[in-house]
Amino acid sequence: MVKIKHVIIIFISFQFQDAFSQSVEIQGKIESDLNVENINVINKTSQFFTITDSEGRFKIKAKLNDTLLFSSIQHKPKTVIIDKNIIVLKAMRVFLEEKINELDEVVVGKILTGNLLLDISKTEGDPPINFYDVGIPGYTGKPATISERKLNEATTGSGIIPLNPIINALTGRTKMLKNRVKIDEKEALMQSIKARLEKDFLASNPLQDDLVMDFFYFCADDENFIVHCKNQTDFKILIFLRMKYRQYLENLRANKN
Image (cartoon, rainbow, N blue to C red):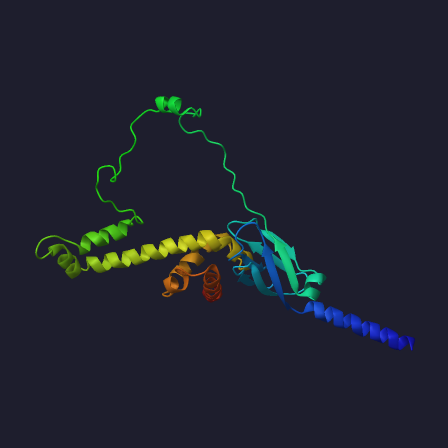
């Protein structure tokens, strides 16, 4: 009888160990005084990742002792180790603190006293004049890049038959400038993604420091880079980067062989 009890206890122990060694889907919720949507949730152990919805909720697979990293531009990064309580409940709540970027105090120009008449009397120079002051309509949209300005110059002209666009089309200059605009667009988008997502992506997809820039250019060279990454959510962009990451590693292995 005693032996049977020991066998039952050992069997139950193995059942518990097996249960804790398996990955389970954990439902979580982020709490914060700031916006809780699109917060990156990365399982650094298994390299799974997801993002939160508009209410701060997320689902991610994890097992006992896995490390979850929570990060966003507005919040301080936070790391949570999956314990037995989280595995049993299959749920967790995480509170994120606001990230405050403090700048050194800089005094520019004269110190104001708060007395309006006195401060105005100490101000030197004339106020700047803009096109509204003189009644001239002006452009207030996004400034054009150098390549976009050159393309506009190459495709516009004056006169009954504008020769500038015709000459540039025949010589191939217009086509060349259009390609340059596309390259500039890819470069700007790639740099924006790198600045915003590099840290979180590399946390679960490590690369040597000297390969990081090469990897992001490798992504930008994909013919569908603009389609997958322009005006897309961070989650979709991370999926694309993950796919390119596997291709990049395969290329590195092939070059070594």
